[in-house]
Image 1: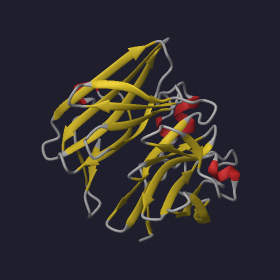
Image 2: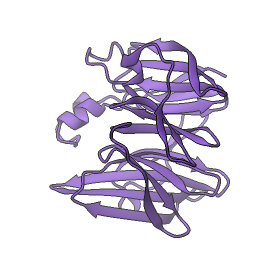
Image 3: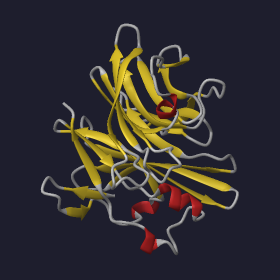
Image 4: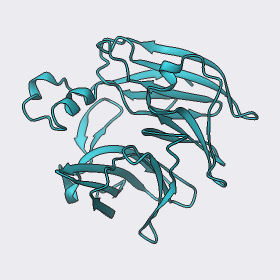
Length: 265
């Protein structure tokens, strides 16, 4: 995990493979408790390992870790932190959401409904009572925190975009999504902004704010900071997966990390 300063300089936030960090995916900062939460995964033959890590924001020291290994295909992908400090985690391969209570070191299945969502990726709080998920199998869906009911977030116009989103960011009545499911050499990879009606929980409008950017190579995660939207532009995820989930032998095909910034607030 690397730290990028305001002037663009880079440094290691933690040491490489610190405390057995595996292939890293989602991260979230919990400023209330001073943690950086991160997820990591690895596959070894028929065994799948997923881990939850918490690092001290100041020192980078590992202060919490949870590990699960079994033969059930799983991939902890993205997460959000609720007010109590518990995590809601998408498991892409298991098509589910887990809830993790750090104080009890306890992981529980929060919701699994393959008829209503499959292949979940990005997750955010739509509001205090609802989660919103990007899923490759069912598009954008809403999950009630109280009833755990899953329903489509209706109102989108372009179904290809809605069913190909990865990273999500919510800001007030806007939902930003990163589309990376195109098979046309990245020309259709896009950043889309949805306007949400908070009362009806429907999409009122959608706008593509970037498409076919020359630096896109499987754009994935997005985050907001200081009135800007930051997007990882070149994850090279397709090449990584096609190479049996390793970068060994394709290092010369990968380009240095690029972030794209958008003035959206």
